[in-house]
Each structure stands twice: as C-alpha cells, then as structure tokens.
Amino acid sequence: MAPEVAKAPVMAGDYTAPKITSRDPNDMPPLPIASALALQHILAMFISNVTPAIIVAGAAGFGFGSSDSSELIYLIQVSMVFAGIATLFQSVGIGPMGARLPIVQGTSFAFLPIMVPLVAGQGVGAMAALMTGALAGGVFHTFLSLFVRQLRFALPPLVTGIVVLMIGLSLVPVGIQYSAGGVPLMNTPEFGSATSWLLALVVMLVTLGFSFFGRGITATASVLLGLCAGYGLAYALGRVDFSPLPAAGWFILPEPFRYGISISGATITGFCLMVIVSAVETVGNVSAITKSALGRTAADDELRGATLADGAGTALAAVFGALPNTAFGQNVGLVAMTGVVSRHVVTIGACFLILCGLLPKVGALITTIPIEVLGGSVIIMFGMVVASGLSILSDVHWNQRNMMIFAVAISVGLGLQLVPEALQHVDGTLRILLGSGVLPAAFVAIALNLVLPEEKAQP
Image (cartoon, rainbow, N blue to C red):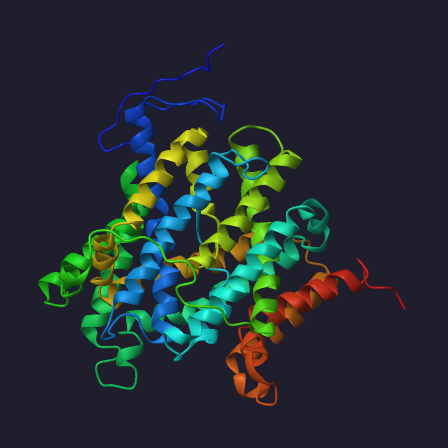
C-alpha cells in the first residue's frame, strides 16, 4: 500500500508544504518538493559545514586577511565535496556502510579544540600532521563501528554532556575574537572597533529575529539570512573585498594527499580519542531520527552502518585534505519538524553540496565575507554547542557522585585550557592536546564514571 500523504495549505515562503508525513525512508516525494526540501537541508547546515575550515585556516595563518587565499578556498571546497560524499554514504549506502536514513553529514566542530592548537601559527605545513591524524582517526572510527553499542555503557549522559559542554566552552572565545576583527587585528587599535561589533551584532539580531519569528524556510535558514544582512551592511560600509573572485577558477578536483603525510603519535592519539565522542554523537542522531520520525528504536545494523559511514567519510576526507565529519544534529531536528524521512531528499541535497564544492567561485565568494560578519553567527553556533551540553546534562541525576565527577572534569579541563603555562614541562603535541581542555575533561569524566561507585559508600 502506498504511504499516506497528508496535504496542508501552502503557506507563503513555506518550503515544507504540502507536508508529507510518510514514515518510509524509501519514499520519494514529488521531485519539486524533494528538491525544495533538499535545499532546506543544505541551508540548515551550510555555514556550520564550512566554518571549521575557516577557523583552522585562520589559526594556521592562511585564513582571512592572508596574502594568498587559495588554500583557504581549497579547504572550503573540499568541506562541501566530502560532506556531500559522506552524506551519500549514509543515505544511499554501500554494502554494510550507511544507515540508509535521512542523515546529513558535515564538518565536525568536535575536533576544533584539538586542531586549532595543533596548527596555530604554523602555516600550511602543519596540515600534514593534522590530516594524517584525521586519517588514522577515521580508520579507528570504522573499527569502532563493530562495537558501538557495547561502548555506550562508558559514555552515559553525564560523560557526553561534559564533553559537549567543554567543546562549546573551548570554542566560545573564537566567536568573540572574530567579532572584534580576528587574529590579523589583534594588538592593534582597530581590534574591537565599533564598526566590527556593529557588523557582528546585526548578524546576531537578524538571526535571532528570523529564528523566532520567521516561518518555513526563513526560520530554518535564519543563520544564513543573518549572514546575508551582515554582508549587505559590510558592503555598504565598504568592508567587502571581491579580489579573490577573479583569481578563483571555475572547476576544481580534490587532490589526494595535497598536504602530504606527517606522523605524530600524540596527534593520532588525540584524533582517535575524539572519534569516540563523534561515534556516540552519530549514534544519538540516528536514535533521534528513528524515535521522533519513525516511532521506533534504531536497529543494530543502522547504528553500525551509520558509524561505519561516519568513519569512512572522515578517512576519505582526510586523504583529500578535508576535515573530519559527523552527522549533523540540526538536520535531525529538521527531519522531525518537516515529518519527511525520505533518504532520497538528503541524497539530492548531497548532490547539491558536491556540485558547489567543485566550483571554486563558491569558495572564493565565501572568503569575501568579513570576519566580523562570520563572528556574529559563530557566537550563536558555539553558544548552542554549550547549550546542547547543558541539555544533555539535564537528564543526569545530580547526586553527590555525579556532581563530583562533573566538578573534577570541568575544573581540570577548563583550568588547563585557561592556564596552558601549567603544562610547560610536558613535551610537544601532548601539551597541545592536554591544553585543549576537551581531552583531559573527557578522560577524567570517563575514568571517574567507571571507577567510582554509583552511590557514595556510607561510613
């Protein structure tokens, strides 16, 4: 029997109408509706997908304001290409790979606390060790897919909430830094100027306005609309530089091992530890889709397939110089909102992403966005990561044991991040990984959760 279709009145600007409530992932809506829904998925994740590449490039020294933007454009392009390919791994599937559900993959924020200090001020040369670590992490991620359900016992909401909270807290300063003018203006009188803050505030206010008062596509794409408003103001103020556009080509193919290979034991260890968090995040997103949109729990093969696709996508991306990816939670929420669980919709969206990624003019246009404009959106995005961590922690029973685990993990993680000089006697990359804050907090939380009894013993 054909799936039931419920028709609702078409609202102006509402790309989700007529609303399809089929609970069959294999269902294919009419092509015009499927294309509009696919575009909605891309708009929901687009800025979040390219932002990590911009942040890593900026930290390394070849981002906004650098004399040559070609490497930044390349990072942006491959972020789109391999987000699309990884999404195809999930929606279409290859053998045991893929959940075959409407899961959209994108560049992960979770790895930024590790990647940023690894490349800080070291230029393009630092990308070799980063990509080698990401490749190793992706391979390890595929191995974890065999045991993902068994590993969940070590990562209850208390632990995952602490990790997500620390990821957000470690990224919050980046949003403020960008809004004030970015790294190139630090220690200059122009840093934190009224114009810089005006651009950032306009982005924030417009984003919040559309998010709460918009309907349909305007609410879904609120971040993108906020960026457009800030970009328009920046153009009116003469703050937009279009010089990268003429130099950018019309077509590009990703290059295997563009940055070379450089093996660092500490870097590889750091990525392997973080993919555990990414695997659990993917499991949570798959479970959310099946529960909210399909009314059932996720099957074992769906969880294994999703994490296998996650790891394979990260490993393949690293080979071509793209950053690690993961399942995007905002798109899971979009599936629940629209009621459309067709995997073919996100397949169309993945094709859009790949097409955009093969056109360098798209990446060059993104690089013309003033960093203060990007900063306004980043403040909101990273703040939402913090809020997500707190939301996870709201499910925790706050007895003395759990409060103690939280206190020690956050104190160690945040303290080491705020006072990196405390690690001056630790050598090399290990000092950078410990100074990220996320890994020490995660290690302390996991260890204490496994060792401490459920309730404090009575004397």
